Length: 286
Image 1 (spheres, rainbow, N blue to C red):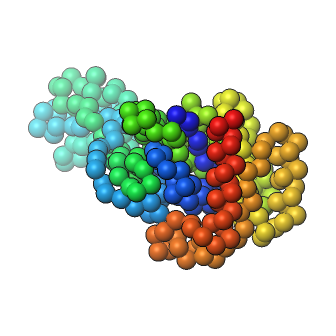
Image 2 (image 1 turned 90 degrees about the vertical axis):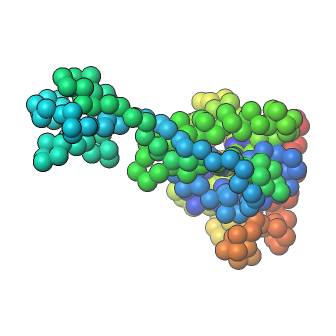
């Protein structure tokens, strides 16, 4: 099994659109949407939900006001101002960082640590393959931990089902979630847009791939909106030894299909994506 992660240095370059199109072409692949802060692959790749689970990333303090003797020690030692000693003592779950200090110091054992549900992770059976995806709650942290969980589950299923490919829609940027998505991958398909900022983001993503010893390949999306910058990207990729697998043109049909919940198929962008898939297959085999 090979593991391919679709990445970009920023959001909005078309990662999910390209991943959805590739999933249609990659028969028997297992899919994972690791952009857990803003997941949307399931909007283009539909199926039947077969599993859904809570994601527990941390714990928070819970205060029992009936056992509390109102000594105020917890409020004094809490560095996050999460404790309120009003008429009914309480701990604000949003402010609590789960450090466990108040529970350990409470003389009346009125504070306990409880699991905090930070999101949900799901498995959907689609015509394009089993899709592992998740949704992190608003303002919740530990997205890298959730990405790691998704990848473990997806890998386990891919190995158990003898799938030839694990195709991952990665998160934008180069932070913790991206590092988790890239960990252990064979190939990173870098999707770039032909803008000045897109060129800088491409360089950052390429640097991360090399640090993590993952082979990078390049696709330039909507290249014809700025051909001069697209050409500069091609020159940069050639100089850095990064194979250019595709130049996908701007195609309004992509937006019409996406607004109807459909992946790219046919048209100029669809044909370019098919050529991209052929190039990616050659890299996987070679």
